[in-house]
Amino acid sequence: MLYLIWGLINLALFVGFIGLCLGATKMVRKRFGIFACILFVFGMLSFAGGTNDDDSGDHGTDKIKTWNFTSADSASYYVKGVQNTTLEETFTLKYMLGIKYGQHNKTMSAVPMSASSSTTGLVMGTSWQPLSINLHSTANSKQLRYVVTGIVKWKLLGATIYAQLKEFNGLAEMNKKQ
Image (cartoon, rainbow, N blue to C red):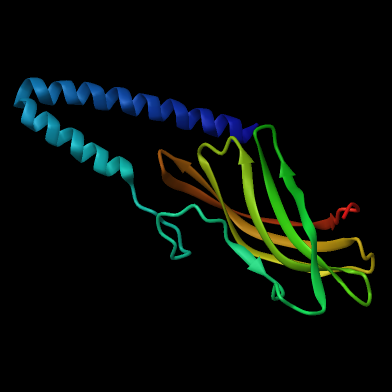
């Protein structure tokens, strides 16, 4: 519910900001003319573009970071499937963990190949930045133990107000169907 309230606050501030910008544009046009109005609009649009504060080095992309645990062409493993696990589910969004796993040829136990974490749903006003994903085999050959650590950035009009550290622990059940 907190995510929904935060998203609605962001939406209200954005609509209010747009209204203020339209009023300011009309004042600038009346007082300084059409050329100053056009310059003002382009200036406001350049600020609206913002900056990318992504630390991954892939500026301008929406790529999901993937953690690789084994090489894909390893001879002792083969890709068995992909498992999506819900880390946390709220009224408006889900934190997800996607696991690509293989099966060890001798022990028939699930072996993590790679993993990534993302969010789905209404993410207005927040952003999820996974910092680490750890996966380990368990005694049960159909399960993998996971620890996912990341930061939820709470934003107002694009500016980070608060950064919350989150950690998810649990067991991921691998698909029984091949």
